[in-house]
Amino acid sequence: MKTTNTIKAKINDQLIEISGEKAFMPLGSFLRNEEALTGTKIVCAEGDCGACTVLLAKDLGADGKLNFLPVNSCILPLYLINGAHVVTVEGIAQSKGMQFDLHEVQKKMVDCNGAQCGYCTPGFICSMVGAVEKIKGSDSNITEKKAKNFLTGNLCRCTGYQPIIDAMTSIDLNEVTLLKDRYYSDEWVKELKRLKSQSVVMNLGDRRLLLPNSLKEACLLKDEDVMIRLIGGSTDVGVVVNKGKLQTPKAMSLYHISELSRIIRDENYLIIGANVTLSQFESYIEKEYPEMAGILHIFASPQIKNQATLIGNVVNASPIADTIPFLMVSDAIVSLQSVKGLREIALPQFYQGYKKLDLLPNEIVTNIKIPHLKSNEKTKLYKVSMRKDLDISAVTFAARIELDDQTKKMTNVKLALGGVAATVLRLPVIESLLEGKVFDSALFDKAALDLPSLISPLSDLRASKEYRLKVAQNFLKKFALEIGGSL
Image (cartoon, rainbow, N blue to C red; front, top):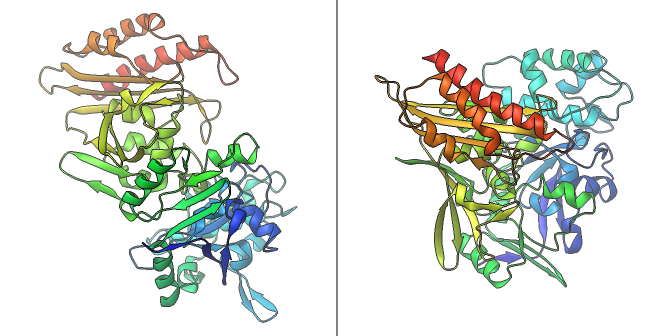
């Protein structure tokens, strides 16, 4: 087993090597304080405002070239860029001696007056370049809708969004030289592969950093030291660490383990590996599970979804997590690996209380298995939050039922509610009430009346218990109306 005790990555044209406790620094802070790349701004330090956006390439695309994606550098620890390439706003224009040849995105921002104070501008530039990297070559123009979708993770307080949207929609894709072409070299691609083929082991007194390159090694390390914390995309943990409410002195990430970065479709399941990001998951399921793809579309910004993992959202175990209700009613199965072997558990049994999991100290969650949707199954997912996009849910709802085409009888009724208890809840009493019955919206009206005896929501800053209860009741009725209308 090849190991190293340093982190290596490329930032723009420079190869960097990081050792010691610096490996735990947020990328944004490292760029500003260590590399003097001050175009990247740190404002919220929570991954919300987008001022810290940079472009990160961890993986190669189908063409064998770097796949640059916008991410929030303020919450991304340096150890998550080992064997990766980072491009900051300083690396987007092409240097020609003492002059710079601006990128097409930058030219349009100038032409359309897309900046006033300029503080948020570098983040917008990086997000727009990320959009161009994805869109060019797809025989597609940048519409206003696409521009807004790609810029949902960037806030501007003084320019106003219209000049920025005008800049993005006026980009001539034919004038763009993609970063993946500019920064490509055979040598660098070989080096990236070599870096990810070896494990990183840093023992720093009471601190440890581990990037194993095999599942066997990861399980051995977790068995030796159960206090090691598994880090996925750091989109949640990174915020808490930045706010000084959590430390991660012993951290392990699995992103060097290629088998955990795959989505596999077999005869019975869609199998999502622990490293699969929400962006990858969203793209893959768009046709098979459009309801879930729709929820993910408003779940978070592109920057967050490019780093956050589905498994991370599952293991974080929030009662208002947007993916868990869907997985609950899908009868998803969680795969847990340890030195003793593989253990599988149905997702509802995985949650034992608030943030309490059926997960042994030496076990690692490696994937989640989602049964395929049957042709006669109907699925609906709803969420309510204080704003539609990029907001934490107050109440979530998922329903999945089988309907006999001839008799319209309901079988295998599965219902789940989030935001009304310490965990996402299945509703077995209501499921039993509906199963075997001919579909009738009156049955759901009755179920809504029974709901107050089954759930006891709490009041908090996002919603009162009365509001949550009313929303949950209305979700049952909404589901009945929508399914009834489709029949």
